[in-house]
Amino acid sequence: MKTIISFFIISILSIATCTAQSFNQEVILDGQPPMLLGKINETGLKQDPYKEWFSKNYSEYIPNPTTIDSLTGQLNEYSITVFMGTWCGDSKREVPKFYKILDSSNFPLDRLTTVAVNRTKDAYKQSPGGEHEGLNIHRVPTFIFYKNGKEINRIVESPKHNLEADILKILSGKYRSKYASVNEIDDILNKNGSTYIRKNGKKLSRQFKDKTQSMYELNTYANVLFYANKKDEALSIFELNTLLYPKNQNAYISIANKYAAINDVQNAIKHYQKALEIEDNPKVKDKIQELISTAN
Picture 1: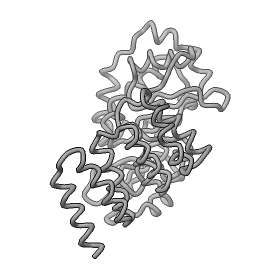
Picture 2 (picture 1 turned 120 degrees about the vertical axis):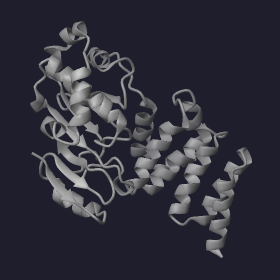
Picture 3 (picture 1 turned 60 degrees about the horizontal axis):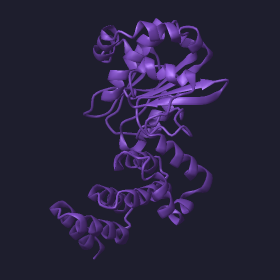
Picture 4 (picture 1 turned 90 degrees about the vertical axis):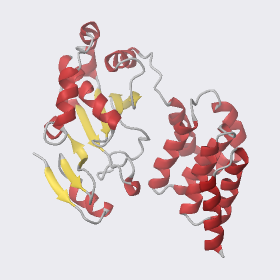
């Protein structure tokens, strides 16, 4: 059974205090659809309004029986943590399928932890109980597989083939996760800090040039850092992204927006101007004028 917490003024501190202790807590923010936050389970997902998409996508998905036969038994050696958003289209599509696969392969659900994260900017892709901390949850859903307490691999956002096939590849040790470059960059950042990222930006851009598929890989990761109040770390990643994608106007707009958000007018204008060097953009010009007016 879910507990409903209704808010007319968003208060992340209140959410954290109220929801960290029990399962299937529902939060209703003023003017927005409800969402589950923190640890949840199948019971919560089978209640309104979530059952509309959970039950439908669960019942309609037919896992490959041969792959399920291969998973049955050996999957039980693992524990799994799922991070999802009940507001997220990818989560709505993939998480019900994942539960269907686990049920079909007789996976014990006491070895599964499912965590619902926030959609608001102040707690973007975070859980009020802090389960996300240190795990680099930059896209949802994220399915993390552990063996003997150690992360073995993860499926991020969507499978490369299908979920059961990707799971089997993880168990065989032959899987490279989508957005693996983000995990590598996160490891470098955690070990060496943002100053290292800035000082070695050109070297890192050469190293990761062929590992990232688009500017949105690191952009999303940097956004998550920024809204987790790791602003210096986030800005170093945004800067690296401009080196990886020097001809992409959005890379410069993204970092300029963040400098503007912290009232660093000089750096915001500098990056907006770099965006204009790539392509004319009336909105960017208006933003520059707004910042100049504010500064004066």
